[in-house]
Image 1 (tube, rainbow, N blue to C red):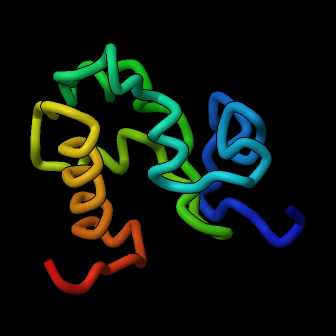
Image 2: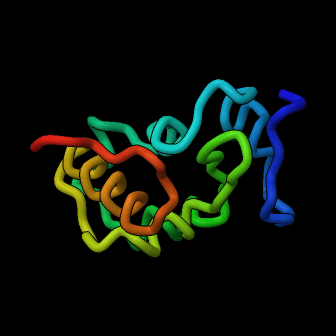
Length: 108
């Protein structure tokens, strides 16, 4: 984990690379967000409520970039998500639109 760092200089509410963050560096991006939603209980999910609860939490995007949940959701257009698949589609598109994520799927 010595090769991982955080260029943001922010004082996070918990360590982005600890168990509460990226589970010791084992999870990044959407995997960190996945821990915050329960497919059976949280949907439909309101963007405003999700950001109010988790907005300050850090999300490690890659080995050098850490952003907050609120930073990610600034780029997500939808205000409500009907299920986990809808949530992931909207969040993934927002991460790409905000240049937070290098992954660019091809095809449909």
